[in-house]
Length: 323
Ligand SMILES: Cc1cc2nc3c(=O)[nH]c(=O)nc-3n(C[C@H](O)[C@H](O)[C@H](O)COP(=O)(O)OP(=O)(O)OC[C@H]3O[C@@H](n4cnc5c(N)ncnc54)[C@H](O)[C@@H]3O)c2cc1C
Image 1 (cartoon, rainbow, N blue to C red):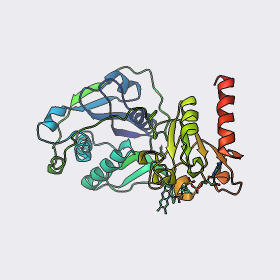
Image 2 (cartoon, rainbow, N blue to C red):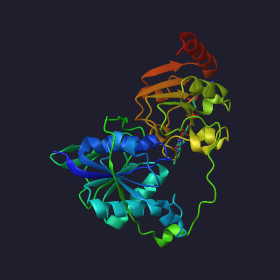
Image 3 (cartoon, helix red, strand yellow):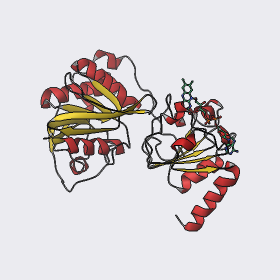
Image 4 (spheres, rainbow, N blue to C red):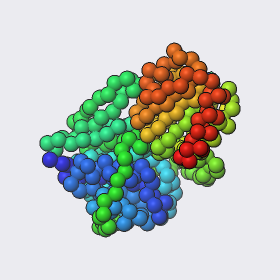
């Protein structure tokens, strides 16, 4: 038996849903008979329906901005979750476990007096009971848990669930009003600039090529390999500390958590602080000159060798194969 209703906080740019919103809707569809999406602005209704929304609650963004609050403020999104929950009495609320999503989840759960799980890997339902699976202790343990208080608030890791569409084409759209909290007016976003040439989004990319200390600062081959495979570039903390790449590329305990189909470590030793952020990758490839490096313990395919020899050869072979 599934849950009756799950509320999903969805993000879009007016034309398309974000990839993680598609994933959240897919996950919600698996565990609930009815999926309600809550969002701001003019959402892509047909796409929301295709990914599983039966009903869409829409807040007019002017009602938020005219009060002096910022639409990107987590307190505003938490207010959206509260208003959606009051209207729909869902059995759970889902959102993406991005930096913003985790903040929203925490604030919404406190206000709802509910339990919360962030960085969840998957959700399942049996006999009407929702189970949340999550890797803990730097990815060394897999846990299954239940939230036993309030309306479960669950932030699922981007890419943990594969988005899949249905052929449903329409969903009911209902206006929703939210109460903008005072704390949402205390800070204001002055500008939001998309960085150029940063390639695919790290958290959402299905291929991630990661450079470590072994690159010795030359990220050229890492960038080339990532571009060839249509992937994103990540890094270890050492590479970020050295200033070889922007901090936003850091993967691990104090960086991004990723779960791509393919992770390629280039000159990465596989320290636990790093692997905790990539252990859920479907396939792990490691190129490192130290055969004792811990990354080989978790790698599906390992190459012991100098990255300066191996990576150019790999690039050439991929080009020749026309992949
Ligand atoms: C509280 C805390 C939080 C942390 N958070 C993070 C985090 O979020 N993310 C993170 O990544 N780290 C984190 N760290 C740091 C982490 O412990 C490791 O120090 C770091 O991940 C190591 O990065 P690395 O693999 O690039 O470097 P190293 O461990 O130095 O490994 C580099 C590897 O490359 C190999 N190598 C060198 N030259 C070549 C070559 N030419 N060809 C092939 N291989 C070569 C070396 O033999 C070595 O195995 C954290 C540490 C602490 C204490």
